[in-house]
Image (cartoon, rainbow, N blue to C red):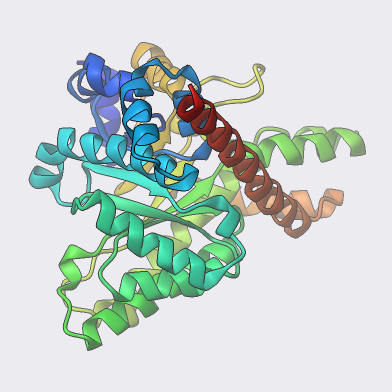
Length: 363
């Protein structure tokens, strides 16, 4: 087992793999990641499933059966993706049984519903029922329309991975939506200890966009901020998490689980930056880091864990954000743009997934 990743886990970071395919399930690659890389969870998204289904061979038998049964395109997509998630849930069940909070596998609602509340609620219920495993998380985007959907499904006892969070203001709204759902669940007599949630903060995409704007400004002060804003923003999100989930409002909910922050989009996109940047700089107790396979491998090879890298650096994080405003970057505009782009990108990936399944059904 990788000592580096063991050290990361010991420092309070749950390592989740941002990848899933039937090939990884059948070949034992997923189990190997659990055994050797301290992986205790899995996240998926439309892009990941589109890539898996495009390969085709692992899904050919199921597609043949679905085509013979006259399954619709949407039903075939749900069948293929939920089968993979269910199997991954079963593989991770020992982790779930041992920890309660980990051993999770996430599956996303159709991204075409990202701006629609009621359809998102309905699909979240369908996915929860179809996967039928206590360690599944239903991913709902943190759009304005997604917030009431989060409250509703949490109130029904459905565990949620809230995705596509970029700004602190939206994160606070997500945490509020989660707690509101717990309050409704408690009023309905549900056991709050069975309800879990993570808030997925996207990291690398922030630096990609902010760096572009800093380079356009071009001053020494602006250029000095490159590669620093995403980490600073995430660190301040962790500070907000500690504040929110130590509040009297949250403490009044018996048995409730804090909604952990999850660092997503942690693959480094700029080759000038260390490939473990969004892992090494975001270490703190009770967080999740979901990594693509290449980042897991990089961490196994050369990650150095020095303990908590968030709490001792909060003043610096505040300074970075203040400096960003001073050089003229509108961070609210950055996060609004990134949310819109992320929704659009996942919708494109979903259409690619539909195309892959359609071709498989025809074949």
